[in-house]
Amino acid sequence: MYKFFILFFAVISLQIHSQELRKGFYLQYSTPRVKIEIKDGIIYHNTFRELYENSLSTMPTKKEPLNRKASITEYQTMTLVKATERVKFFDLKNEYGASPNEKFYQYSLEIKVGDASKLVVFRSNPSFEGAPEEFNRVIQEVNLVLDSISKWETN
Image 1 (cartoon, helix red, strand yellow):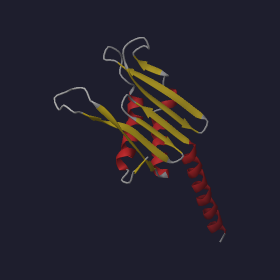
Image 2: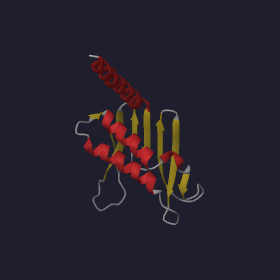
Image 3: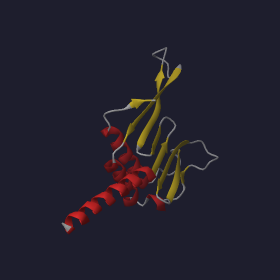
Image 4: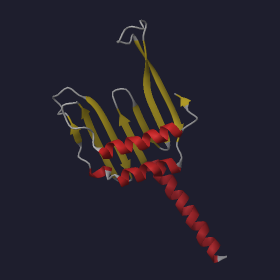
């Protein structure tokens, strides 16, 4: 009977910790075309669709926003936290790529886990260094979470 209570309290403690982690995890990934935000166990995916009146044109005539959200599981949250830890995301420099006075496309990734917080900015320009592999690996994990979601709500 004693072992049952220990196991029961261990399971309850783990569930409470997982829920706290899920609510304490924050991620925001921004690109020129996409914004992904995870907070309080919800993933928000905002992008747009370009519409062309002239099929031969390279310039869109209109941009239509596509905004959706979904709940993510504790397992998906833990996967992202572990990816962040595995690549040592919090040890990265704050900025990579082109300097602010050059032409660039900006990609940023901000992550908060508990008391740890980090914003990494990558300014894409072919004349400068690429994004660090650690940055790209976290984005790959985010994309895996996105791809695994089957039920989205539009907002």
